[in-house]
Length: 92
Ligand SMILES: [Zn+2]
Image (cartoon, rainbow, N blue to C red):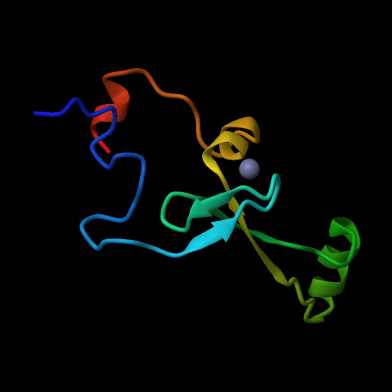
């Protein structure tokens, strides 16, 4: 049997064959979508303290969702995922 570093081979693809490629939001690297780390953040257009006050007065404050994809290198750099010990990474 071939040595496996991770059970998933570092991807979330399973057995479904080839997947689309996307560009890393940070470095622009072309990576498979299922390998990239998808991060969604909500961008607040109003200062948090002000937003809280406005919400208390019943205002609806839109917070657009930002979707970012990071390659593994950038995900590690930004602390999205961490480097794990040999045994720990076997599980998934
Ligand atoms: Zn990157």
